[in-house]
Image (cartoon, rainbow, N blue to C red; front, side, top):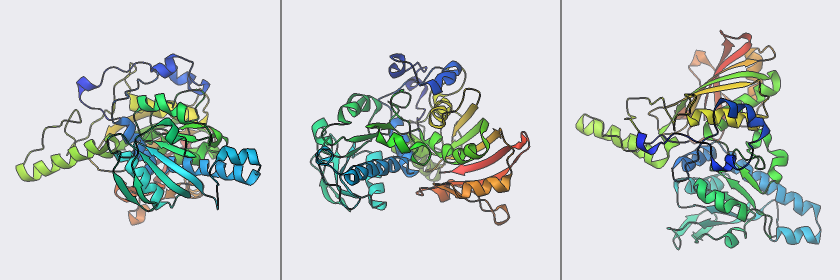
Length: 408
């Protein structure tokens, strides 16, 4: 998630050069009328934070799994030319190699951890990082020597996960994609999210043909978490309005944000006062900060507008479906939560909606108020499914409205 640093470090948002050079996707046309598309801050840690949370919800590895399936389909189709294109034999549903660029950072480490925990079907993993080059990382895939990055080396993998800044990805991801093995690149930065020709993918929602692209973008974590619950409801009842308020953990600001929260609490215990914030604009312990990222001209922050822009693109929403978000940083370590209110085209019954959500891939219904069971970040931390609960009829929108709470 994009972290709001100090006021001096958060300039006013301008339209990014990636959009300024070409028209945005048609699905984003109405969103652009609301506010300019976001300025990209390649040097910030927002890329890492966003990628980390996306990985925790499984999106990036889900995309990698789709790429694996694509390679397997090539194997099943047979043919010498196709076999040469894949290069490394894909045996028993496995790909030859998965590469992680930026492997020494918090997100890169999380990627490797997730590959291990999910027993991802790859013969080997290659790690690329500048400062860590030459070091050896012990993993379930064996001892891995970290390599300096090069396009040629990355193209020796069928799948490459990018855990790097937006500027680095913008330069090198298109160069890596394709090549002798038809390498699939999955980028967790914001560099390509709003480009017409790059799919913005949540695998459970719009994987399919999008997995055939040689470059795929991963959405912002706030969007991905909410989308998991909103998509099955949209399929059944058709969304008309989405009103979201978020409760975003310190982990959304990366390792530095989490450390500042812990340090502030430690200082309070030892000295009776929270230490001065250095990463956030205000102290986070015993506080909430109703701003994440820079303010836009319309009064929303870039983090909030990402939800509008990205849901429009992922869902293919028509212009008359309106999405609004208020994003708040809260003093929890991991996992974000969201309160969501929707208005639908069709009447929605809470019991039926609960059943729809219970059958949705990547969603876990936790909704038993009598037993005090509902989604909480403490329970959602480290889990791949998004928890959904507090499902109830909306007092505002009546039988064509629903309210619920998610954590993931």
